[in-house]
Image 1 (cartoon, rainbow, N blue to C red):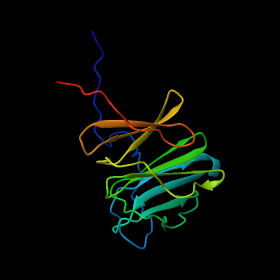
Image 2 (image 1 turned 135 degrees about the horizontal axis):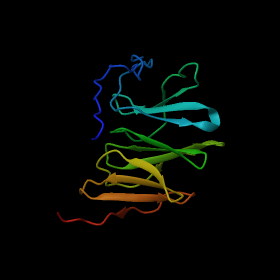
Image 3 (image 1 turned 180 degrees about the vertical axis):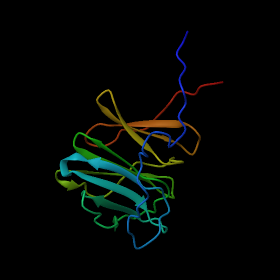
Length: 168
Protein backbone atom coordinates (compact mmCIF):
# COMPACT_ATOMS: atom_id res chain seq x y z
CA UNK A 1 0.00 0.00 0.00
CA UNK A 2 1.39 3.39 -0.99
CA UNK A 3 2.02 5.96 1.68
CA UNK A 4 -0.44 8.81 1.78
CA UNK A 5 1.02 12.30 1.47
CA UNK A 6 -0.71 15.30 2.90
CA UNK A 7 -0.80 18.58 1.01
CA UNK A 8 0.30 21.67 2.88
CA UNK A 9 -1.53 24.86 2.35
CA UNK A 10 0.56 28.03 2.13
CA UNK A 11 1.63 29.12 5.57
CA UNK A 12 1.02 25.77 7.25
CA UNK A 13 4.04 24.59 9.20
CA UNK A 14 6.58 26.62 7.24
CA UNK A 15 7.88 30.07 7.72
CA UNK A 16 7.29 32.51 4.89
CA UNK A 17 10.15 32.63 2.39
CA UNK A 18 9.77 36.29 1.35
CA UNK A 19 10.12 39.41 3.46
CA UNK A 20 7.71 42.30 3.22
CA UNK A 21 8.10 44.64 0.24
CA UNK A 22 10.60 47.47 0.60
CA UNK A 23 10.63 50.40 -1.81
CA UNK A 24 13.80 51.25 -3.70
CA UNK A 25 13.87 55.07 -3.45
CA UNK A 26 13.51 57.01 -6.71
CA UNK A 27 12.80 60.56 -7.83
CA UNK A 28 10.52 59.41 -10.67
CA UNK A 29 8.14 56.66 -11.74
CA UNK A 30 8.94 53.71 -13.97
CA UNK A 31 7.58 52.41 -17.27
CA UNK A 32 9.10 48.92 -17.16
CA UNK A 33 9.44 46.06 -14.73
CA UNK A 34 12.96 46.19 -13.26
CA UNK A 35 15.49 43.46 -14.00
CA UNK A 36 18.26 42.72 -11.53
CA UNK A 37 21.45 40.66 -11.69
CA UNK A 38 24.24 40.04 -9.21
CA UNK A 39 27.73 40.99 -10.33
CA UNK A 40 30.24 38.94 -8.31
CA UNK A 41 33.47 40.88 -9.03
CA UNK A 42 31.96 43.85 -7.17
CA UNK A 43 29.71 41.86 -4.80
CA UNK A 44 26.87 44.11 -5.95
CA UNK A 45 23.35 43.76 -7.28
CA UNK A 46 22.55 45.84 -10.36
CA UNK A 47 18.91 46.77 -11.10
CA UNK A 48 17.85 48.04 -14.54
CA UNK A 49 14.60 49.68 -15.64
CA UNK A 50 13.31 52.64 -17.61
CA UNK A 51 11.68 55.79 -16.32
CA UNK A 52 8.14 56.81 -17.30
CA UNK A 53 9.63 59.00 -20.07
CA UNK A 54 11.67 56.06 -21.44
CA UNK A 55 15.11 56.92 -20.09
CA UNK A 56 17.16 53.76 -19.43
CA UNK A 57 18.22 53.76 -15.75
CA UNK A 58 20.18 51.61 -13.32
CA UNK A 59 20.80 51.33 -9.58
CA UNK A 60 23.29 49.28 -7.54
CA UNK A 61 22.94 47.61 -4.16
CA UNK A 62 26.13 46.98 -2.17
CA UNK A 63 24.55 45.03 0.66
CA UNK A 64 24.33 48.19 2.75
CA UNK A 65 22.06 50.33 0.58
CA UNK A 66 21.12 51.45 -2.91
CA UNK A 67 23.26 53.95 -4.82
CA UNK A 68 20.28 55.76 -6.37
CA UNK A 69 18.79 55.49 -9.86
CA UNK A 70 21.06 56.90 -12.56
CA UNK A 71 20.07 57.50 -16.20
CA UNK A 72 22.25 56.30 -19.05
CA UNK A 73 23.22 58.71 -21.81
CA UNK A 74 21.19 57.28 -24.70
CA UNK A 75 19.81 58.74 -27.91
CA UNK A 76 16.87 56.29 -27.87
CA UNK A 77 13.82 55.67 -25.69
CA UNK A 78 13.47 52.35 -23.83
CA UNK A 79 10.16 50.58 -24.32
CA UNK A 80 10.15 47.35 -22.32
CA UNK A 81 11.87 45.43 -19.55
CA UNK A 82 15.65 45.42 -19.98
CA UNK A 83 17.72 42.26 -19.66
CA UNK A 84 21.12 41.68 -18.08
CA UNK A 85 23.33 38.60 -17.81
CA UNK A 86 26.80 38.01 -16.39
CA UNK A 87 29.04 36.08 -18.78
CA UNK A 88 32.86 35.80 -18.70
CA UNK A 89 33.10 38.26 -15.77
CA UNK A 90 31.25 40.98 -17.71
CA UNK A 91 27.67 42.17 -17.36
CA UNK A 92 25.81 42.25 -20.70
CA UNK A 93 22.82 44.63 -20.80
CA UNK A 94 20.17 44.88 -23.54
CA UNK A 95 17.29 47.34 -23.82
CA UNK A 96 14.64 47.42 -26.53
CA UNK A 97 13.43 50.79 -27.73
CA UNK A 98 10.24 52.35 -29.06
CA UNK A 99 11.72 52.23 -32.60
CA UNK A 100 11.82 48.38 -32.25
CA UNK A 101 15.64 48.30 -32.11
CA UNK A 102 17.66 46.67 -29.36
CA UNK A 103 20.68 48.34 -27.78
CA UNK A 104 23.55 46.54 -26.10
CA UNK A 105 26.33 47.53 -23.70
CA UNK A 106 28.62 45.64 -21.34
CA UNK A 107 30.26 46.35 -18.01
CA UNK A 108 33.48 44.69 -16.84
CA UNK A 109 36.81 45.35 -15.16
CA UNK A 110 37.42 48.35 -17.48
CA UNK A 111 34.00 49.89 -16.77
CA UNK A 112 31.20 50.37 -19.31
CA UNK A 113 31.80 49.85 -23.01
CA UNK A 114 31.71 53.04 -25.02
CA UNK A 115 28.16 53.87 -26.05
CA UNK A 116 25.34 51.52 -26.95
CA UNK A 117 25.63 49.10 -29.88
CA UNK A 118 22.51 49.14 -32.07
CA UNK A 119 21.55 45.49 -32.66
CA UNK A 120 19.16 46.43 -35.45
CA UNK A 121 15.39 46.41 -35.82
CA UNK A 122 12.62 43.79 -35.58
CA UNK A 123 12.51 43.52 -31.77
CA UNK A 124 8.84 43.15 -30.90
CA UNK A 125 9.26 42.57 -27.16
CA UNK A 126 11.93 42.42 -24.47
CA UNK A 127 14.90 40.08 -24.88
CA UNK A 128 16.33 37.19 -22.87
CA UNK A 129 19.99 36.23 -22.50
CA UNK A 130 21.37 32.89 -21.38
CA UNK A 131 24.53 30.83 -21.44
CA UNK A 132 24.54 27.57 -23.37
CA UNK A 133 27.39 25.29 -24.48
CA UNK A 134 29.98 27.88 -23.45
CA UNK A 135 28.41 30.75 -25.39
CA UNK A 136 26.14 33.72 -24.65
CA UNK A 137 22.82 33.77 -26.50
CA UNK A 138 20.19 36.48 -26.93
CA UNK A 139 16.65 35.46 -27.89
CA UNK A 140 13.67 37.59 -28.80
CA UNK A 141 10.42 37.63 -30.72
CA UNK A 142 10.49 39.87 -33.78
CA UNK A 143 7.72 42.16 -34.94
CA UNK A 144 7.08 39.54 -37.64
CA UNK A 145 6.15 36.95 -34.97
CA UNK A 146 9.24 34.78 -35.50
CA UNK A 147 11.58 33.87 -32.66
CA UNK A 148 15.23 34.79 -33.22
CA UNK A 149 18.53 34.17 -31.49
CA UNK A 150 21.92 35.83 -31.66
CA UNK A 151 25.24 34.71 -30.25
CA UNK A 152 27.95 36.81 -28.67
CA UNK A 153 31.43 36.20 -30.08
CA UNK A 154 33.41 38.24 -27.55
CA UNK A 155 33.83 41.25 -29.81
CA UNK A 156 30.17 41.89 -30.52
CA UNK A 157 27.01 40.07 -31.45
CA UNK A 158 26.48 38.19 -34.69
CA UNK A 159 23.53 38.54 -37.07
CA UNK A 160 20.21 37.13 -35.87
CA UNK A 161 19.14 33.65 -36.90
CA UNK A 162 15.43 32.75 -37.06
CA UNK A 163 14.39 29.55 -35.35
CA UNK A 164 12.73 26.97 -37.62
CA UNK A 165 9.00 27.40 -38.17
CA UNK A 166 6.94 24.61 -36.66
CA UNK A 167 3.46 23.72 -37.96
CA UNK A 168 0.94 22.39 -35.47
